[in-house]
Length: 253
Image 1: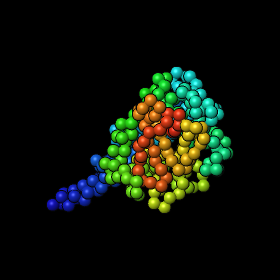
Image 2: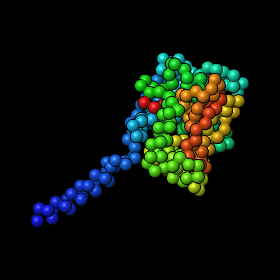
Image 3: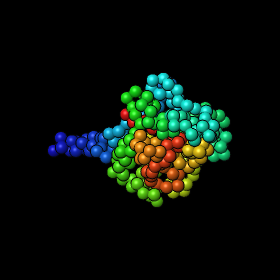
Image 4: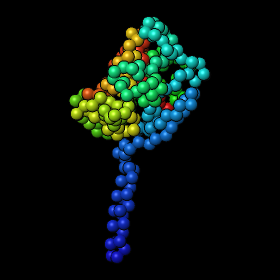
């Protein structure tokens, strides 16, 4: 009886520590790592389910073979090129107030890439990594949904809010526009950021409002699939866009 009296309290303490440490089957606490691109930029990475994602937006300027992407294109050249190109969101845009240089913009939100850079066989991502397919994004969202976060527009606990970074209208960038219902809480360590886009026509918009990420999956000849998260909704939306758009990029291992 004395041994049993001691055993059960000790057993309960051990079990409590086990579950408190995140070792349950329903554990969603992220596991982090890192990876470095050809330019020497280091990125935090995160394991979500059985996928490993970059937890930051890509900042690279070269393909894996060392070839430079096109950059510094004016509106007309951006609109017309069918070569891989990158852009840095205009730091003088009113929505980017608080960022004083292109370097600060890149540090906060990464760079924007047209889809021709995504499709280039020389590869944007570090060795052993790639651009996610449309089905990779679906798998990510499905995992988040399976952990109790519906992929529904009005849902405060929705998949998009669970993937957003927690930085909702702080003083410093990076930050999401403030919303009373749809604040991010970054449950899975993905830290989705609203890097906006360079429109196919060359203009910049949506920083602070939307995070937009290419997939490697083409829809039709001039359009490809991407995923987006909006500051004022709870979902991760899927649609297609002109390949000349400049969106953020997350690589997957």
